Image (cartoon, rainbow, N blue to C red):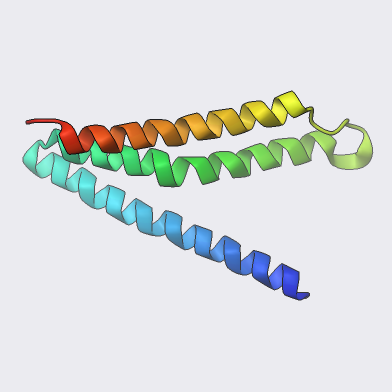
Length: 109
């Protein structure tokens, strides 16, 4: 295994740990929402989920889609419009997460 592969593997491991840690925080915020019927906690958990969990999963799904469409040499490489659309959707998901987090800070019970 080369140094590049080891760094890539380490980066993927760190990414997985970030997702796992975020899921723990989202779970705790969801429990707090259920216990106290706190709308800010619900928005906090939704915002963190949309900001830190969904984009990497969406990115992996997009990479699998692109790789699957070009496998075997029969398919053409994805167009710039396809890649741009996937990136736009990923960024819009992140933006909605930021919006939910900001709303959780300023909402009143």
